[in-house]
Image (cartoon, rainbow, N blue to C red; front, side, top):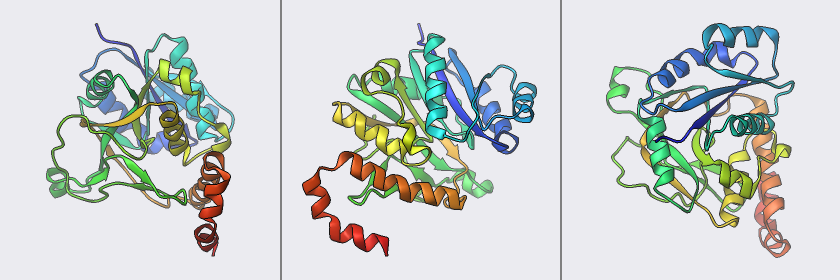
Length: 267
């Protein structure tokens, strides 16, 4: 018997107009049968709610008044838990999922009793026929350096077969990962102070401190319409939140040791 999964997608203003159709169509083709889709309508308006109702009536709409991405994920997780979902998947809307994407995520998580998060293999969304035949990697698990910068691993390398479910030494990308109700009850919800970006670093860090590990499900494939530097707002929150993460989790002696490099990064 399959466990029920809640898939949480966050809309922001007109994202649904740009990205929902292909994301929806790929979700409808999933081989895993038992899931609900929750669209958290962040900065919700009657226009965006009407668009979602008209184009994806099966989705459960969770309206929110502002653009806080971390709070939006919390709202989706809580609603999924109320509806009896055992597993929660955080996913971006600017994506296309392979038919076995969800089933492989669930199997990857269930196969690792110490898992806190399991991330999908993320590929860059191909732009032409040749790229569909040989796609490039977006992330095989993200990494963070000592100054709090987050990076995608294996970025733009050719796709390749990865066996088993390897551990990710860094953190799980918020573009597509699975966790469980039990893990959330143990480590807590998203820290809403982060608002957006680096929220996945903070959650992964907290999970590791609680004794969990992070894994990659390489047969759970998602194509991501990745655009770095999509907005000035994104760059602001990435810079702001790396400092939040460092000051939240580093001890005072560590902060003192990295002070010369931290000052250099401000210039």
